[in-house]
Amino acid sequence: MQQLSKTMVILAILPLLVLTTAGTAQAQDTWSLERCIQYAKDNNITVKQAQANVRTAMLSERQAKANRLPNVSASASVGEQFGRTIDPTTNQFSTVATSFNSLGLNAGITLFSGGSINHSIKQAGWDLKAAHADAEQLENNLGLQIASAYLSILLGEEQTENAQKRISQTQEQLNVTTKLIEAGTLPMADKYNILAQLAQGEQAAVQARNSVELSYLTLKQLLQLEPDFDLQIERPEVPIPADANPDALTLSPVYQTAMGTQPNIRSADFRVKSAQTGIAIAKSGYYPTISAYANLSSSYSSQARNFNDPIMGDPVLGDPIIVNWNGMDIPVSFYDTPISFPKTSYFDQIDQNFGQGIGASIQIPIYQNGRTRLNVERARLGVLTAQMQQIQTQQTLKNDIQTSIANARAARLTLDAAQKTFDATDIAYQNTVNAMRSAPSIRSI
Image 1: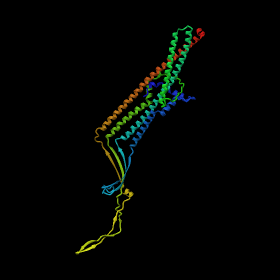
Image 2: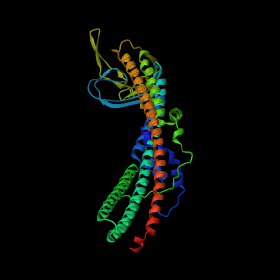
Image 3: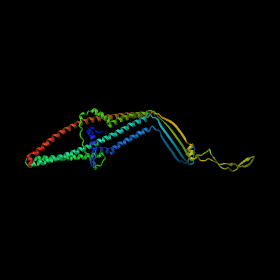
Image 4: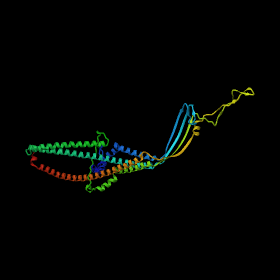
């Protein structure tokens, strides 16, 4: 979680900075803070991963809800049988090559499963809300990081300008001191001291420029831009609100407000509820499962015959049979009528072999090697872990608020002291300039 101690000042001036930069119109293509944050939300890989996690959670919830619906499946098989096999339509042995085809349609639905389906839907809903909160928290953290880098650039540029001004002032002081040394008014050691101050000022200017470059690099990395991208940010005027009084901030109201607004707090709450629902899912393993099913089936065989509609052939006189009658062999002939049975057509077989079935089944858990009990214990430990994470998140938030309030108060005191120092230094500088301008030795030089 983003440390509030590093972002309290950013949060305080962020609205003013966004509003100011949004309304600034410049000829040069510069990036406002609002544009940087929006660009990062649209292009940052971490944000896209969080959005993918949200979509995954949405799919998990849809899958949990779909478990209430029946399962329907169709099956089909086709093949050729050789040798001594069983005809699939007559269930008799046959040695003739047989082509076959089987069709089936099966459906099943779970009527009762100990409430696991309903609890799984609830758990998926909590996980989806937690994923949304995590994505929101990630975007907030990214926005704060961008704001921090943005302000670091502004601070570095101000420090660079101040360093350049100090170098100019030191150079002017060096010129005056050189003239005074040439006039014999000051010793040579004063020149060396000023030269040392000039070198220190140049070093500070280099460090300030390096700080700006590093801050720009950090901002580019957050925006997923190439290091050589020509990025320039706007420099808005951000006045400090007159009513900004860190001394009026106290822990309790700020903490209560943060508890209702911070996405990571909501995410921790949702994780706890999801883990608690996991206990009910684990306990559903103690209950029986009742299911209902139905099926349709039919089959075809190339050897199936229609015995109800035989085909009669023309009578044929067969070979005579010798019959002994009173000691005499008498030849007797008979007419033989050939009979054949036609093959049953494909669709007739599908119609004749059409079968249906419906039923219900129940599975009662008796002994499962203690798996259900262990799953329940594991779910309870998951609740404990989620609660500890929730407490840790709340405690971290409280610590960050305390640190941020202390830093805000210290920053305000530092600002007041710096303002007093600036005013006193400015007065001393003006007096020095006036004195040097009115000094005869300086005029003569």
